[in-house]
Amino acid sequence: MRLTRRENGVWNLEMDQGDKPDPQKSHPAYLEALPRYMTAMDPAFARARDRSEFEFLLCLLRVRGVQDAGWDPYETTLRAVPAICAAHEQVTDYEAQRHLDLWVYGHILEASEPYEILANLLAVARGDRFKLERFPVRRGGRPLSPETKIRILAKAAAAEGVPQIVTPLTESWDRTLRNAVFHADYSLHGADLRTLRPMRKYTHDETMLLINRALAYHNALAALYESHVRSYTEPVVIPVHPDFSADPDERCLVIVRQGHGAVGLKDAWTLEQRRAGKIPFRLGRFAPEEVKLLDADPALGSLPARQRESSGGLG
Image 1 (cartoon, rainbow, N blue to C red):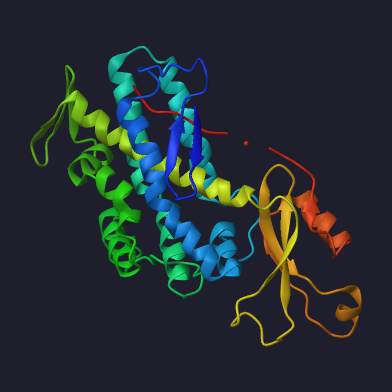
Image 2 (tube, helix red, strand yellow):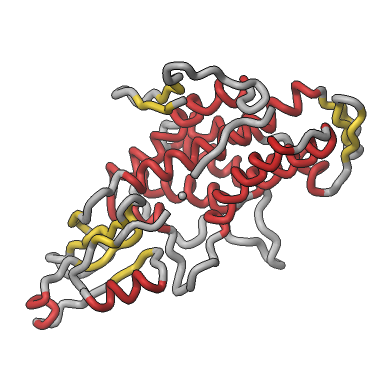
């Protein structure tokens, strides 16, 4: 199966010759929602990129201060969801499968970074700039709930004229199910899932609809994110945001990793310009050996290849 995008921005899930969807691995709700959700969220990326490519890349790079490797929860989520889906396929016990289903659902809806990505893209699309934190914690260190974040995103998307951007979230979010999962206030009885506070019964089909829509939301956002990162195949010079530098000649170079795409931004000054006093900068997500390569050659914009993968629906 392949995801393809038409010129009008509509995404389709196309079957390669000989493909037959396995209902145990690709739930109908997932197959229906995935291309629809990609179509819904794509304008957030496209509009931000059109408004300011520099700020758009900051949204993709998500650099927040100086950190070594291993401090990006979204990278862990992108590995965790396919790993749990793969484990799910190996499990034969029904209850164990359902617990894994619910873990995936809760993890996806609670993950903070996807909300930050969408909020920053919408902000850049309306002319604002990338912010380190769009959903700061409240007094006492308590984070905003997913429901509150979805409500804020819905307001921003409507103001931008693209309310469909939050459709994947509104269709996936169920407060009762989320609370039951994370407080272990649910019981399994045959094919039904029953919650205690409030008392409610979910049929197998109702539960799987929510789980597979959440998975489609996660994979749609991940696919869009990755496709835009991968669209940068070679180093390219772009304008910086007008508020980034007081120097009218300032430009920046997009640093790419072969086989991956954009991984950073740096000044585009020549050696002579640096010697004349132009101020260099560099930001991005680099492996230690890549930092050494960039330090050794300030003009370097292309890094050697490293590696990565994705998942299907839960049956």
